[in-house]
Image (cartoon, rainbow, N blue to C red; front, side, top):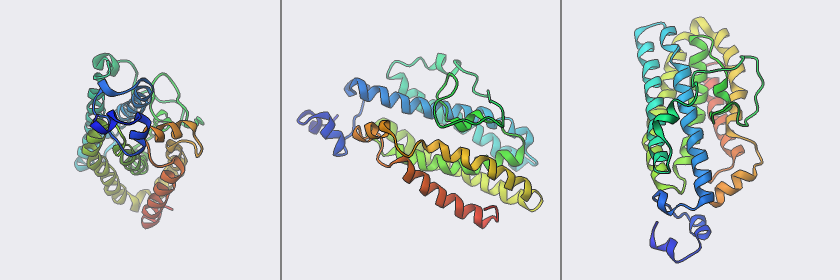
Length: 252
């Protein structure tokens, strides 16, 4: 925490773009919201990694197998980097990673809203199963784009150590999406109808990961400097970007 934070109320300091730098200078309510954000990220990355692991054996070629392995590995690594920060707040890292079945999924036809489901804090989209290579690639493209928008938002938050880690992670998350696009372009000539069906399935489920348009919690996060942009604006930005991508692939 800088000297500025010592001469003005913390709320004003954060509202003016101030940064907190360690667990020792984080107040209780801020700590609770910060840990909730980090837990959701960690759980989603672990669930995403575990769910995508099956795609390694679905891959139609060696390059695709390498790409799927890279995504599986790096998402687990991203989770560990943020979990290392959570250790500073007293989280038992070893126990945490063994606390849930990260590969567990519900029925494909289930209807889940954006609220928390199950015993962990993964995003709702990670409760749905993948059905094969084409489905996995489509989901990776759609969710990869959403992740880039979400991580970019969190990376500018007021807890400086988290922002630094997320800015390191961001280029790799963007590369995951690009690998998905490369894989999708390769299979489209033969799998266009299958890919289009997967787009129709995953698009609304990924859109829900941005959260409700109106949210009291979002206003608290903004006041703490942990968020800046409202959910609907992020969703629309992602929608415009992914819409253009799908149109270029004739999948809109």
